[in-house]
Image (cartoon, rainbow, N blue to C red; front, side):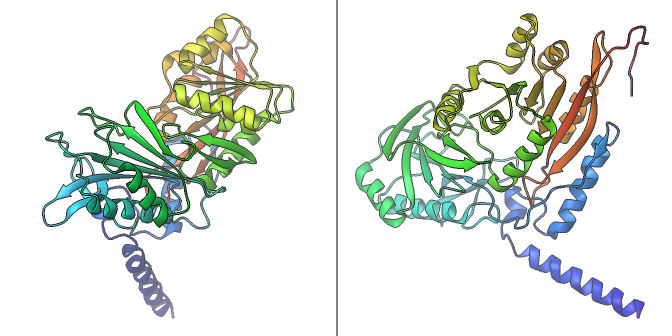
Length: 415
């Protein structure tokens, strides 16, 4: 009996592996996904182990919060264009660690409407005899296409990244694209004429619609511009932010700082439960959107500043401002010592750290939980959230509580 069950289990596992292996034809080439040959439950188990291996020394790691439907979750799709012999103009993704374009028709991760729009743009480029940009020679016009989709609103923005501001037969091209895809609500031309690996350039021209889209997240409306940061997985972002606000333990009286605030998603989500919210962000376009988003949602207790997060925190500390809660959501390389030193000096009662890289999170927690002259932070608990199914990336939200230095206490690290 045991042997029969074992054989059945093995057949079932092999069946699952074969099934998942067919989910993407180019995953081995593009390198965008690491787990397309792995059942989703196994992905969650592996990520849970990764989080515990890196973080369990700091405190409790809760079970991973996964998705019910982990496919086609990306609301932002980027395609690079190229010319390949025998194929003509192609669109796809760079092969891992190279600038060789892997042609992609359908992606397991990407919004399906966005994929179809990119296919149409590629065919229209052939019809209009628009050349793909060549990175080596600098010749050609069409470099990239970005498509952003409002998960709740259904609004769609298309950004055509060109090597020149002149798109031949622009009006006809835009008209044909909108005929093929009436769901498109705005089209923007972005000009990037530099020999660079950066996708977007500085100049933009709105050729159809308002130049931005709106979406609803955690009950708030958000304006999203071409360059604005907005989490790519809308479903899991709500899970993540709800957990972050829960960890903040807001009562309606607190002064809250949202560092690295982007377009104000966390700040405005928390504003209804806080006394005052302050957002800081270096990207000027994102700050403009954050201010607009506060106005759209009729939120009057939120202010946004364009500044480096570390510098801004240091200024608050020097001014001896009283801050109760800090949300910090730094980029993949983590926070800076300047920011964390200012945080320790400001010592808000609670810190909620949202990280997209558990390795740099572990490094930063090591810094923040070490004893200094005034005190340190203690990790209360951590919750991993699977924001990026089929990849080896994971997000972790961490709740920390400030512990003042005890009078007469010893030096060194305290657990």
